[in-house]
Length: 174
Ligand code: FEO
Image (tube, rainbow, N blue to C red; front, side):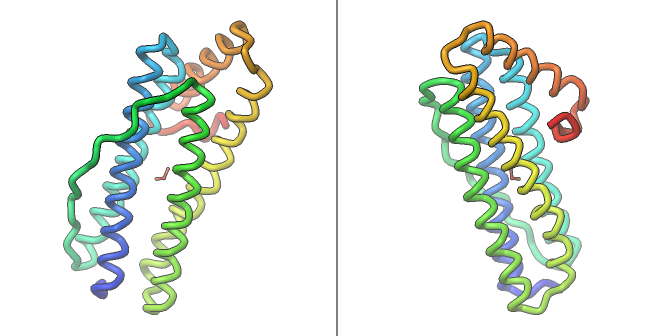
């Protein structure tokens, strides 16, 4: 049975994962409108993954005798200056998510809830991968600079990454 504190912390994380999914959906739509179809495919997939992260939490909360709260969502930002801006925003967002996850883990230890602590380790690992991938993509974009040919290849690579992982994620290719 979840304590009220743990239930609240997990529901906070549900809201964060849901907001992440919306944020990446807005980025995907922006990229699609710019003709960056590979980047759009990558971000649509990333948005789906965040929804999966949310669902995993919802199911865990309910299974452990708590009540999952499905949150209202704010409209995410849609004003992007360019593709590098998108991935910088994504990295910034993910570093904040990591801090939040660390906060939940900390609460688990304080409450001596080792089951939830164990469950949260999946999220800890996920954050390491997501931050590393975002940094790699930003490094690539910095190398490309304003080179249109480089950008074309970058977008094509992201298309390949999204297709190769067939809906389950992009990490194996990262
Ligand atoms: Fe579910 Fe990207 O954090």
